[in-house]
Each structure stands twice: as C-alpha cells, then as structure tokens.
Amino acid sequence: MNKKIVFLLLAFIAFFYNASLAKGNLVEQTFHESGKINVVVAIVLIIFIGLIFYLIKLDRKISEIEKETKK
Amino acid sequence: MKTVKKHWWKALSVILLVYTFGFSFLVPLSPSIKSATPNSLEIGENKVILTGYNTGFLEDEPIHVSIEYDKQTLLCGTAISVLNKNQIEASFTLPDSLPSKVLHLRLHTTRFSCFSPELIKAFSIIEAPANEVQCSSPALASSIPLDIPNRLQLNETIRNLMFHVPMWFTMMVILSISFWYSIKYLYTFDLRYDRIAREAVNIGLLFAALGIVTGSIWAKFTWSEHTDLFTTSGWWVNDVKLNGAAITTLIYLAYRILRNSLQETNQKAKVSAVYNIFAFVLMLVFIMILPRITDSLHPGNGGNPAFAKYDLDSTLRKVFYPAVVGWILLGIWMLSLKKRISTLENNLEDE
Image (cartoon, rainbow over all chains, first blue to last red):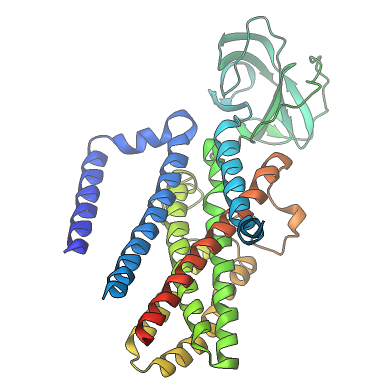
C-alpha cells in the first residue's frame, strides 16, 4: 500500500517535471539562474531526504521491536 | 566522563558537518568573468562587453584587462568603462598575427584578480609567435579574501564537492567495514559479524544511491552543457566512473537478493560473506582502478595522479577534508544504530 503511494507520487513528479520541460524549460531555467546555486540546493535536499528515509526505516524497526517486547 | 569517552566521535561528526554546511553556504564565490560579447574578435579595434559574476565593479576603480596566451600578455584592454556592478566595456586592438586563435582573459583590480581561460576567440588571424607586451596595471590586492574558486561551467555548483563527493567516500568506508566483518565471520562463524556486514551493505547502498542521484543532477547542469565535447546531454554522461559506480551498486543489490534467496541461517551467512568479499574487490576495480586507466571526467582520474596534484585549492581543502571526515563519522553512527537494532531483534528471536 505504502509503496504504491510512493510510486504514484514519483510518477506525478516525473509527469509534472516533463510537462514543465515542454513549456520552455521552466525547471531547467531555475537551475541555471544565479550561478546554478539551485543545483546545490537540490543536492542538499536529496541528501536530506535520504537521511529522513533512513530515519523512517529505523522508526519502523524500533516499533516492531517494541511490539515484540510487549508480548 | 564516561559518556564523553563513548560518544565523542558523534559530537565530532556533528561539529564537522555544521562547519561544512556553514562554510559551503556562507563563503562567497570568487569574482570572475563569465562571458564576453562578442567573444569572437576580428583584426582591428573591437569593443567588448565583459560580464562577470560577484565582481561588484566600482565607478572610477582602476581596472586592468589583458588578453593572454601561454602566460604571455599579448594585448591590453583600453578605454575601460564600468557599465554596472557586473559589466565593464573594454576595447582591444588585434594585430594580424597571434600565437593562437583561442585566447585567455586576465582581469585585475586593487581588490581581486581573475583569469578566464579560453574565453575569447580571434577570427582570421595568422598563427605566429608574438612578443609579450607590458600593460600598466593597478597594484594587486595585498590580502586574499576567503572565497571559493569560481570555475568555468561549475560556478556555484563547486559547493557540491562537500556533499556529493563525501557520499562516495562514506560508502567506501562503510563497505570496507562490511568486507572486514565478512572476513571475520568466515574466521569465527560468529553470526554477530554477519549481521554487521549485512547492515553495513544496507547503509553503503543508501550512500551509493545518494551519490548517484546527486551526481546525476550535478552532471546534468555542468558536464552535459558542453555538447560539443560530450555527445550526451541528459542525466547520465557516458563516463567510466559513473558506469563503474552504477555497476557497483548493482553488485551490492545482488548481495541483498542473494541473502534473501537463501533459507538456512548459517548457509546464508557463509555464502553472502564469500560473495561480499568478491563484491568489495569488484567495487575497488570499478571505481578506483578502471577510471584511472582510461580517461574520465572526474578530477583525479585518467593517469595516476598524486594526491597533491588533485584539483583542489587551499580554500577548498580547508572544508573538503573536514566534510569527508564528518560524513564518514555520520555513516558510522548510522551503522552503529542499525547494528544495535539488529542485535536487539536477534535477542528477541532467540527468546
């Protein structure tokens, strides 16, 4: 269920990204402005998302262990 | 006191990462000339508008512009006028012969100096050796301000050095830990070591994924732009190191699949430990050895560079090394959490 939601979200992002490309490279323009600083912002955001992803996985595992110990 | 002894490296990781983020977002990029219009000059007088980045030209500031080739000053810009903070106009008078059709530009003021290689082309000149000329120039700035180098095509994205590159360093360290514990497992057949090896591969894969995605975005807006040099212009550039990194990631994904396909615990541990040793060696071949044998877009590849020759200047070194150590310690911290959780899980299963 969760995986489906993530997949749908990614598909939507990909779709809107492509749509914006068709309309005169809006997304790409923002990346080229002011010395391409937004590329750095995007990369830092991705690393942040990666670490959050790790936290979520950790959270789930700890919940499982908590359930087991309560039994 | 005991907590300090046990957790100092976590604090160190946080301090180093705070320093990394602060440094890489607060230190400005050094001023440089981005473009010249027109950038192809003809014989005779040419009026050129030079557009800079972070230059902040002042009215009535002494500015010196010259065209160079092979460390020789060939032409001096005359009638220099400041148009706005980032633009100046200069006029160059080209003779009929110059040593090269592709020329470099050097600019300096009392505040900074910058060099833009291959910024200007010359039309219909004859290529012949030329004499060096002397230009009257303002005194150079006595103290160099702290700034990050502004390279052609990279611009602000040079800051990614502190985020993208340490991802791979961390991955390599984490996978080395995994390799070490796999060997330890094969010596002792203690399942504790096998669990550490497994968790290390998972964390390593996370860092590899982050490295690939960040690298792909970085390449898209820097390497892919030079379409006359590289044939691709998408999210993936056909470079040995990129392909090697992708293969490495697939090899380690196969490690996870192999583990999940085996049922019996000891057999699973043994087979995957042996596979892990092979995978580690392949990883070294694909991302350390092969890119050095052929040409690669990554700096420090192609040939066998000494570490001192590495494409880093002294300002970036001040933040790059702390960044690498900080990210590696963060990776080890993440691994230790995973290890403790898997131990707890295992204890519950045993009961």
